[in-house]
Image 1 (cartoon, rainbow, N blue to C red):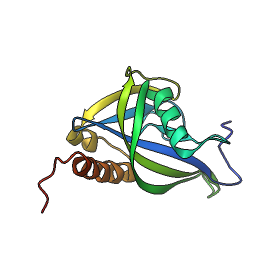
Image 2: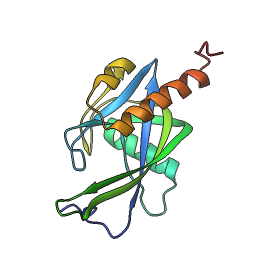
Image 3: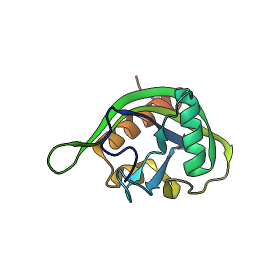
Length: 152
């Protein structure tokens, strides 16, 4: 049984929307929750580790890439109930926008695949609704940060 299954309290997790040249990095989850589904790279924060350090470590472990944190995006609760209503998983996810700074793309640790998708391809995947929302938010923020928008 997963040590994070049926928790006594929420697990703090981090997630990264890694953007590069209009593309977004996704991983295929290799473990529950959401095993086999495409998602953002990320995972649980470890004791004594800052949120930014956890984000960089998780992205490196799952994708082989080093990243620079650009901006905070949102905090999301992932609460999964087992049959009968008990909480099976509860993650409080802190999501950030990031960009690669080095490394070599490859699937690792909790991921069975890792690759960049064009934004429209990523959003066409059957992603969790919150993942869609965060990717869309990140894409707008990335364009503004990189000065690639004609808004207003």
